[in-house]
Image (tube, rainbow, N blue to C red; front, side):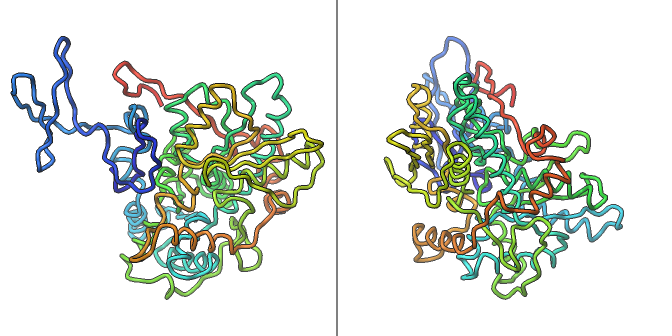
Length: 477
């Protein structure tokens, strides 16, 4: 499992994890019998596990079979999944669908759509010394040569996420006096953080978390709902793949909340990482630098001319930046041109404050990595959190440093690589969500009107506390 999913978080050792190096904490099954003392576990050189009883008798142990529910509910594991899910969420599965398309009649073929994240583009851009927009055009050609029909940009769907986050924050702020869990609003775009929150803090923390969908699931909604209707095809006839910087996005796509029951299809069928795209390039025997660029599919791409746009703020999506500037203007009439970040305990814990006449009007924070997340949780439980909004991300340094990103080459440090990826990401011209006319048109044509209840289902989601049985395994997710 570890080769496909991010490493586990040991709750007793809250050092942050970046690479999938740790093994599952439940590798073997031990049958407990009442009245007997706990036996010792002995591991042989070949990796075989034996249970050693008090009398010295050794019994070989079977490997435990761990399901997705088990992984999300045991007390030591945060983000792993069962082998069936991994098979469904891999570049091999994309290849399988593309092969079937070539062997099938036109009526049986799937319409294959790939949506690429800005962070994945930046990772590939750093590896090949290209601009992020050049990567997008060359990836478009690469995927279409394989048989993909459309290649989109999740920077486009992120505009929906930012706008909905802004509006959700204003609603929460307006009811903060009567609803003590309206604030702080905690960003919800990171599935590693959401998985941890549901499993570890449950009903206590869930009311604080923004219901706005992540950019990946916004795109899933766009593709399987709006795009399908525009193309005149049923949602289940579309095979939707996303390219993400994070293994945990595979778990997010598999959530029951993002399954269209009537069409019997997931909104995102398959998630592959930036590293898996590199593996595909290697398997095809091509370098991204040598691929001829293709025109971008502009229907769902955040573009200006032939160049892709990004969003201001952090490389994890800019949620703090956009919610802060919007709230400052709408609530207090303050036009914020530049945010001043104050670093607190470390570079992954920063805050921004809006003050007027010595009074704090808004206090926002960005909290990255599980050590900082734990500190935030402790403050919330003690009623000591001073924040109105927190941009929460599981990975130290945010999404550009996701576990699915490309690894350093020989003689390259993680720090140097991250700086190059950041530079590639920042080189794109920023866009302003409120001024995006195509998104405004979609609110009108697809969602009928901005902020109406009709927009809630395709743009928002819900969370679930993970219930545990007495032996620590999940009985519900």
